[in-house]
Image (cartoon, rainbow, N blue to C red; front, top):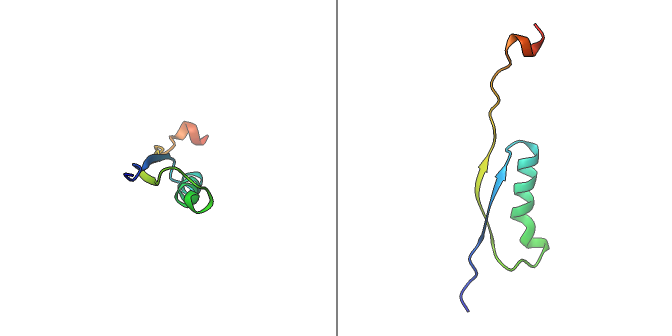
Length: 58
């Protein structure tokens, strides 16, 4: 029987929650009997522009 193609996932967020979820997905096969292997394909995070004077309250 041919090997199952991997489940390709992407993570939105690169700070704490993004890191926590990517870690959880990569460790999932250790805890669950998954029908396909996991492959983390992409991670993205937003870059906030610096606050202007009005947003800072100055």
